[in-house]
Length: 351
Image (cartoon, rainbow, N blue to C red; front, side, top):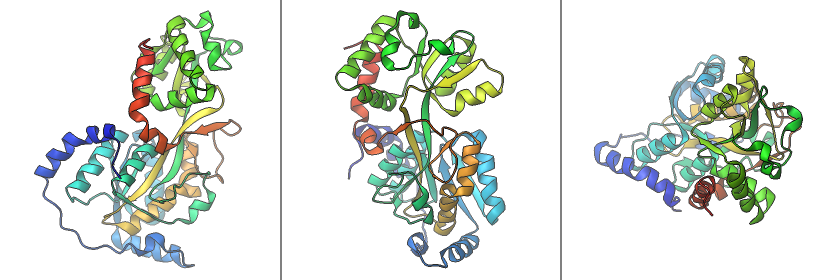
């Protein structure tokens, strides 16, 4: 199945260069049988095979500062080395597609946003697996093809500067943002087209789209590149209220003493991050062991301790009690071009 044209354009230039330059790496046929093995001795067999392989290579977009506790927990438990290549989801997607096209099979496990993981599924970069952790995950955390599974939810929240905005004055709905008191006070991240699509859907089309067009026309929305930057600008008072920042960012800023707090116009909108195992993984057993760890209670508890929202329902969420709407990664992928244009046009005041 063809990948969306937008993602194909993202990858095409890099892929052509890599196919011409990279010599295919000769690989040995690996034993993938344990990736879907469900026998009673699965855990013992998987760990023994993983220790023989000795390590794995992970490509991920996971925040660099949060990787050490997650990786070290796995390495201490199993004595298996995890080598990490980290970048943004788009770069991980590009590299994974490029190396597969060049038959350069080095990566074992990939962990990025669910829409990008779905793109890798369509391009046959991943393979289906079975994990005992599946039974504990949120509904729809594992697609029918089983080539990736959601590890955590990145939840968009609204953040505000507590020196400039009173809690009692916070908007309770998107329609409240039409109030003239918000003129010049609103900010949003430049690439959050998928949040926007879901927010519009919550209000209902075409009313939702008109609502946001009216908000921009009447009060303006400052567009900033990067959620960290946007959170910092809220803390500095330059953007008194941000419509889209990630749930853990204002929490971290507040811990450092910044006058920042978060709230949610419910339901909060979330995007899943997910993990999958490469179809030609050189270390499939080690990759599967790490996959289980990321989805199981140990890895998920570490993530929750870092203020991520876990996909494992046995682990307490930092956003417990808040209604969350999870976007559909297939829809996000298929409608990316459409909603990117609508989002950009809306923020620029175009109708």
